[in-house]
Image 1 (tube, rainbow, N blue to C red):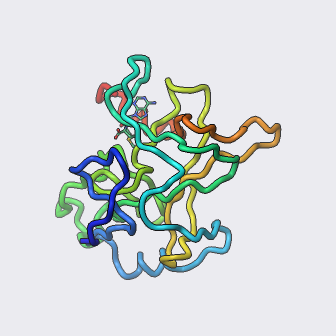
Image 2: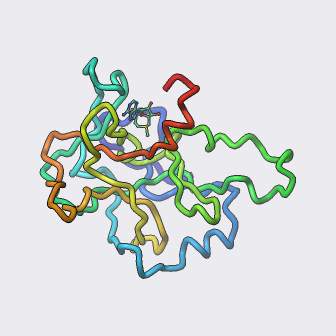
Length: 206
Ligand SMILES: C[S@@+](CC[C@H](N)C(=O)[O-])C[C@H]1O[C@@H](n2cnc3c(N)ncnc32)[C@H](O)[C@@H]1O
């Protein structure tokens, strides 16, 4: 278990605040080798540890917001197009569990139903799940029902500090027609979870 870190304001006491990932026992040496092999196409980021001064976790109390009663992540200063905002940390895991060749021996995969699980390496089945532990990034909502379009995106990075691939949150680049103007101070940071996320939850009443 990583050492306890000072958490950002409004951080829930039931969730562990991380400055480095947690590695599930489902992650093998080969997975770690793959994650620790630099891919020159990835943006190389000198990440910082601890609460970010670019963002603020804010409880949502607007009845028109589809995540009313939950929280969201808001910009605490103007952020230019393409800016790296912060890292999405969580438990790095592999699903299905490679330790069992017979799927019936698999311990229930809680990550498959997590609302905080992002894919890090689709080919190897590696994900990063911030359900029980993470950074401020776990509070980023989907743009649907909130704004016309997303203003940020999840994108893989090379974390220079750890020498490892990871998931980052970036302000959307300007785009060819200059449509994306960045994120203004006080604006909610919104990504697109993708239709797959909502498709899988259609029958759960979400
Ligand atoms: C990664 S969490 C986002 C943070 C969450 N709002 C919180 O306070 O912990 C994903 C969950 O947030 C909610 N959510 C995010 N975006 C939403 C949207 N556009 N409409 C409805 N619910 C949303 C859903 O409950 C979803 O399962």
